[in-house]
Image 1 (cartoon, one colour):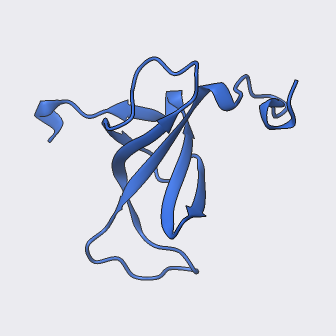
Image 2: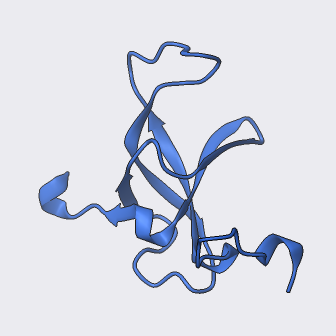
Image 3: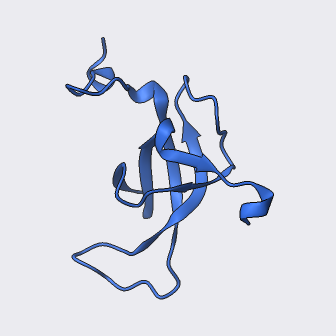
Length: 93
């Protein structure tokens, strides 16, 4: 088992069920404790091999408190488990 695929005790997920999302930043975003205020909505950038419900380019919603934020090439990204994202349907737009 690769180190990045090691499971966290009490959790049944690996990097294979992860979804990388570029979140929308709120238009009135202010810096709060060193971070930006994000919407619970964004575009899927990348997915793990086991993800079945979304694909890159899909719009999704998510709970801002879930997942992990990373800064990569000057962009804020959110890494979430597949179960933490919900595809946006046309009626949600």
